[in-house]
Picture 1: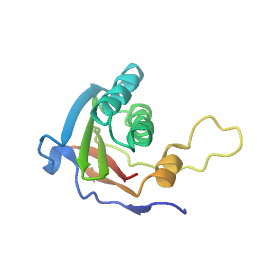
Picture 2: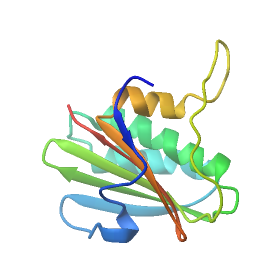
Picture 3: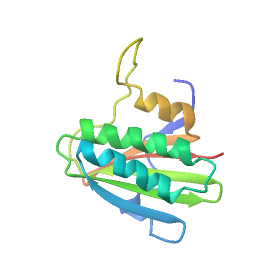
Length: 143
């Protein structure tokens, strides 16, 4: 699996330890497909002037879509965006109690299964943290 470094623990996950401040924003969405474009706009609005805005928006959209599709027992998905100097840190947290993120190998004309491949290719670092209260998948990206 070439690409970004990967870990199964997160340095920061919004509900656990990321206080809101002038360099961060958090928003919670219903776990419905109709909410994915709103989550994408949220990331775009928060990072509008950041050089990594488009890549962060794409990766966050992939992770929100994963939560919508695979966190079957979750009701909500929270997106937390933090600017740490030139680095952007994004957490996507679902409140589901079952399952873990799964790496899939997409082939040829497959229409899905490339979300983590994109995250791995574009992020500097990424990983996930699973706790009783849900799952946080995070990434860091820099220009």
